[in-house]
Length: 230
Image (cartoon, rainbow, N blue to C red):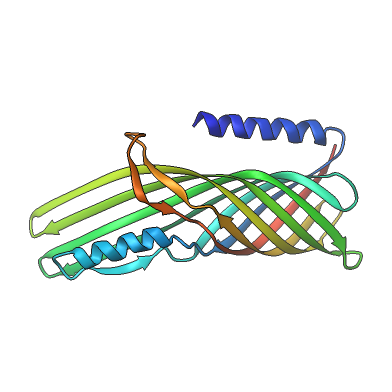
C-alpha cells in the first residue's frame, strides 16, 4: 500500500509543479479490454483435467469493461505530458452442477495501472485532432482463488488472496473532437503489453505461485475531456 501512495504522491506533485499557471486536461475514459492470462488459463485447464468430477471451464478471463482517468498538461502546441491510471478486472471459472449440488473453482483478478504518458497531437481540421500516445508505469494486481462445494446439505468453501506488481507499456492512437473551448470527446484504440509478473501470497510474502499473471491485450473505448486554464 505504501509504495502505491508514494508513487501517486510523487506523480501528482510533479504534475502540479509543471502545470501551475498553465493548462490542465482531465480525461476520464471507459472501454473494453482483452486479457492474455495464458498461465492462469493453463491453471484452470489443468485443474479441470485432474478433477474426479466432470468439471468444465466456463469462463476463460473474457474481455471486460475497464475505467481510466488521465491528467494531462501540454508542454507545447503538440507535445503533452501527464499521469495515466486505469482499473481492470476479469476472471476464470471451472464449474460442475447436477441435481445433488454444485462445485465451482474461481480465479478473480483486478488491477490498478499507475504511470506517466507522453503524446503527440496533430490537427486534422479546426475541430478534429489525432493523438499518438505512449504510456507506461506500474501495475498492481489482486488475485483471489475461491472454491465452493455444495452437496445436498453439506457445504464447504475456501478463499486465498494473492498480489502481484509488474510493468506495463501501452501505445495508443485516438481521434479527438473539440466540442467547445473547455470540452472534447475522443475514441481510442491501444495495445497494452504487460511483462508477466510473479503472484505472491498476501498472507505469506515468501510463498509464490508458479503461474504468472499477464494482462497483455487490446484496449478500445471512449473518453471525455475537461480542459482547465490556470
